[in-house]
Length: 275
Image: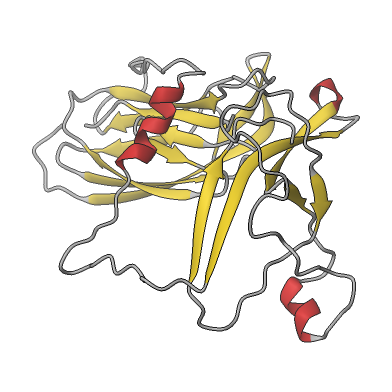
């Protein structure tokens, strides 16, 4: 349902020299670039092929990856990167000195048309000439749900003596939000429709002025404070067919909480394409 980028790090780097810490920023963008008579819509740092990482054996390479592609989520082999998310990746340069491809592509396990082209960058050991062909990574299948979601299963709270997980026992308000997709007509989009995200079967409409500004100046008709604490139409969240139509609403609707209140939020994924 959620589209992902499958990104693979296959490299890491050799010469007995004092280790260094090197930092790189990778920005994944949707931008048409023509190269070798082919259009490349998904690029890294505005380039195709993507940038090259240089490192020596023993170096610590810190890679910041920010996904600017809308409606696309991307991971590394065990890291999911959602749209707009930034993830720090620590790479150990302890493989045979060579050149290695890093690759990213969308993940989609629903029958929806997506751009399945692969974006690449090169991780290269210092001292290795550019004529060496990079090693190609073996990407998982574009619909390998188990692989794409395995990273989420590994996320755990630190819950240590230094960082204890102190959970409030008294909750002032409980929220239950379903996360899903809807469809809107779009004459310039693939097959005449576009996907839109929804919470509790409501798709957020961006206001023309800031929400805090409207609240501070008491500007009317900018937003409503009636966002539901639970779905207005309960349904089989994980079993409903993709063709289910529960009527996605549009609006700038917010929830209002008392200052210093304790709120419990449960997020429920759904098997719904059009709700």
